[in-house]
Length: 245
Length: 306
Image 1: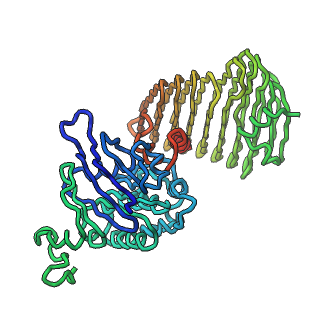
Image 2 (image 1 turned 60 degrees about the vertical axis):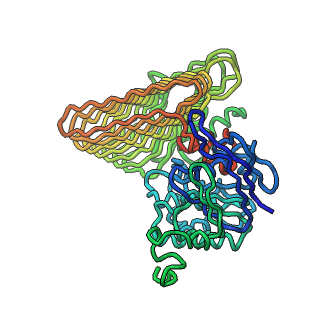
Image 3 (image 1 turned 180 degrees about the vertical axis):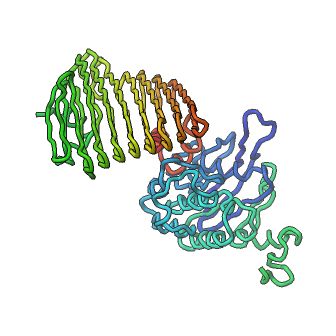
């Protein structure tokens, strides 16, 4: 049974000529990683935000565990165990990293604030007492944003371009974190990303373009069709089998 | 015997119950309620007008003196003049402030004028909290005025807070800084309902290498009205910085008027002022964590004022 089912979802802006999302139908299962990719402005983030209740649906239905949550607001969806890591982290000035993670943590989550910070490559002792202000780099804020999702017990965890601004070393750790999360929990993980290295860990890749789902297939299928010029030798079917990466 | 309301107010504006061994002068409804002095801090009643003189001996370190005032009777206008003479090379914390409880239909007012002389190389932390409570229709009015003179090498950090419940407030702070003297002035004001608050801060950087920083943070909601006039004058080689940030909500009004004047070519003065609403992204982020909008607003405001 699908943990998340989206039926004929249409999202629009009042003055826009075209829908941002047009009649999108998708289903997601627990314990799987889904990558949503596609061109800029195609509707990926809108899809994620509409699941979180941040953008209202003009029509269609969103069901979690079979229950219609379309009319729920952001808080209601959060309580329905949906989480969303912002593409651009919000600076909550005056709030410390520890305070944010304490606010974010759900009582039944097995991951502590300390563990979550370590999972994203940050030392709790160095970061807990610092305020979320301009003293942080974009990459640090991004990792704290991801940690604020990891401390929650979620059925559906959405990460909007989690790799943006993150260095290569941390990126590798991030990929491992998503992988471990899938292994250790039943959470359905939806990642908006353009990174092939994340796609390699995914169970399915979904392409959203111009408000429509244009592809939904396994990562093997998807990666095998990507032209050489796009992702060079990292492809699994590259001449050296991707070993040179 | 203090009433429950009086105890609550004292607790909010001072540490007199948790730190009982410090020199204390508690003023209750315009009269002296309790006084305690120490070997290094003496408190004397003024002879010419209501109020006290507080003397901190030279070289006294790590001392705290608490001078809270409580007005709990309706219709009172309490006027007090307190002078603090902080001896050379000493280090002291002053906890002042006033709490008003007005359960009557008459206005209740406290006008406290503080004069602080920070002598050579002395260091002072001055904490002043103002709060109003009570369900009476009479206004709770506070008009504090503080004049500070910091002598050569001296330092003062002022932390003033008007938490809530004060209907009308006009706060005036004037600071004079001599050679190598430094001041940090932090001000936090929250207004709601139909309250009005005016804050005037004037800093005169008189001495060579004097420096000052004014940080003002405020939240104005409902139909309240806040006005800030912050002025810094550099008369020598000096550095000064004014920062005024306000969150405005509902039908509130906020005016912020920073002014800097340089009378010496080596004076470096900066002012920044910003007024804005709570960023919707901040609210949204907290709501995605399951926090209801009203609670999210409170978290953001408390953090902003922290």
